Amino acid sequence: MANNENHLMDSIVSLCKRRGFIFQSSEIYGGLSGFWDYGPLGCELKKNIRESWWRNTVQKREDVVGLDASIIMHPRIWEASGHLAGFADPMVDCLECKKRYKADNLCEEQGQKLIKTDKGFALPEGIKCTACGSKAMTEPKAFNLMFRTFVGPVEDETSVAYLRPETAQAIFAQFSNVLSVSRQKVPFGIAQIGKAFRNEINPRNFTFRSREFEQMELEFFVKPGTDKHWHHYWVEERLKWYHSIGLSADSLEKYVYKKDELAHYASACVDIMFKFPFGLQELEGVAARSDFDLSRHQQFSGKSMEYFDQDTNEKFIPHVVEPSAGVDRIALALLCNAYREEWIPKDESMGGVIEAEPGKPVPENYEARTVLKFSPRIAPFKAAVFPLLKNKPELVEKARKIFDTLNNRWPCFYDHTSAIGRRYRRQDEIGTPYGITIDFQTITDNTVTLRDRDTMKQERISADKLTDKLQELLAD
Ligand code: ATP
Image (cartoon, rainbow, N blue to C red; front, side):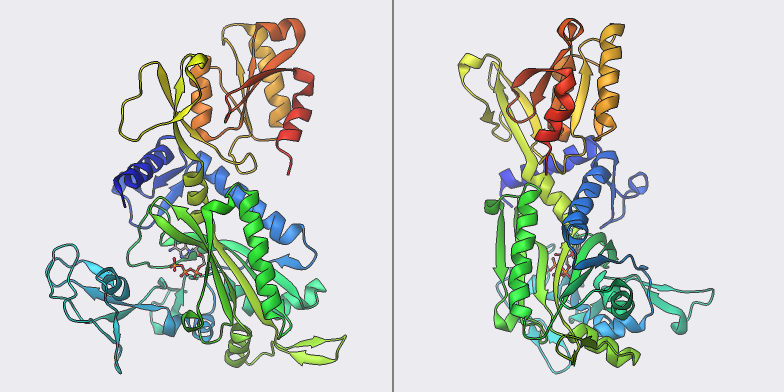
């Protein structure tokens, strides 16, 4: 990472902690690598992401229904899915400093490729530990990313179970039940939001690669032969959703898998990538996975996964198109996308706002502000209400009344402490799109000032029109 990007990520991590978006898990005990806790604002942000996805993917459609399955499932599910056998990354340890690496990443970083052998994998000549420089490394060994646990009081091999490494498999395992109760016909989908767990070797980039994270997955079941059409459809649908929550087209990229990069059963896969400060990285994968998953569960469970098409009298195992996204990665992308440091001239005649230069002191006659330019749709609070002074009962009473009315409708924030400028800055920093100030003029003519977070412009409007105005500004 270049210095500027480093500075940017550090500033975002620091704001997340300072303002209560994201804390390190178990921080008072020194933290636990790969685990994160979402504070008061972080959980609002995540809730807004989930709700927007659910509304868009499930509730607004007639052809998708939901599922909320258990995290621990029958271990045969992971045999059928291939996770037990295949969800293993070859790892190497440095014999000197004991640092552990994903073997393929280590080779790639050093311009080489991990060698596949009859027995497994081998490191090419000259690969060294990036931490201490030693060339004394262990042989690459498979390491299963699933967290193991035991069900019941006896801890032996017969009671082993796993925390799910993805939510998708429960959808396949419940395919027949959902189909029989939902009166759906192919093409249709089953969606789920929930926690997933992977014992990632190298959790990094803040929450980007965590060991506990949340997925939003859709399995869209289609007639064999229509995979290409539906795959294309879902890539476009998903991109539209990202735009709707404020990630513009120029912050995203599609990565189209080449034939030799696809899993043997898949016919297409596109990753939706976001330009993070630490590089272009995956937010979501949209894969056409054929009938692989349902066929495997049919084979392993002995239960039919066939679908009978009443219109054509055909029986088939549906193919599936899977858009699979991570809530935490999207939350991080939204934070990175929204984060700005600006210098604001104290006198308007000096010109407009300028972008702050990292590490440089604020120029004379300018004031610094940090702002999260969230789309109103995903901002934790939609508006903040301020009485100009807290010791004037008539202002406070009016402000409380306005706050109660608005807060009844949207999550709002009430703040009467410190100077008004500081209160604006505090809301800017957490991305609240609108600020409403109640001052002495309010008492005489019932107008308030409405301040826009991004332009910092203020307009005076009647307090009676606030709900309609916000409704218009916050509209879908
Ligand atoms: P990567 O290549 O980054 O490990 P993946 O291709 O293994 O990701 P999938 O199995 O396709 O990921 O999972 C779907 C989505 O779940 C990802 O696009 C991502 O948003 C999220 N996800 C996967 N692993 C993690 C993780 N360790 N931490 C946070 N989110 C994750």
